[in-house]
Length: 208
Image (cartoon, rainbow, N blue to C red; front, side):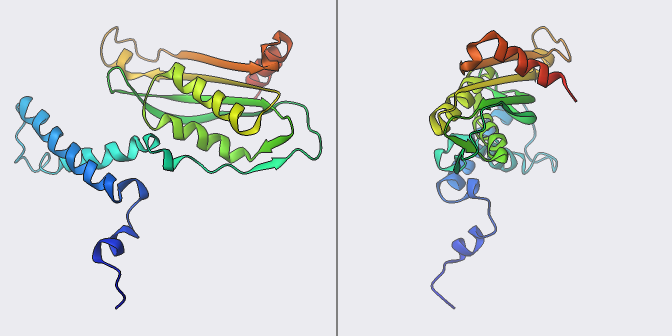
């Protein structure tokens, strides 16, 4: 047998967000969460709760994997050799995130548009960018700006616009307790500051 350790063999079947240092972090989170459960008066010997701290530790490393900059999606830019100068829209991108104020989920859809300059980007990468920034304790406003800023920095488009609509469980499970309420945010740069361009974007969003 080669000199590969048992741990490295196991890592081949372990997701990247739970390897190495992240595995240790998951164990730390599990320990802290077990203390929270004790404060709440829960019986950790209950078979339904016995492994809950470990599950929570692994889950946190999964849903917050966007905190690891090494998980940033690799982006391949392509030359805009055809000189395409109209709008590119990827809409209805489902995402899940966690509100950094209450650590309760919020979720919804992102709509991303850009007008190419000298380069274009693979369409699937746009969804990956949204997911990357959503997978961390987040504010919807900041998530919106981060997606805009990423595209601006990577492909230098003539303009970028992002609209996000989401339901926040911190409004539905607690506080005002208004189920189904939608929060909408938008971020724009470049030619999208022109009202005519924005109107075209919103008109295209309305189409099925």
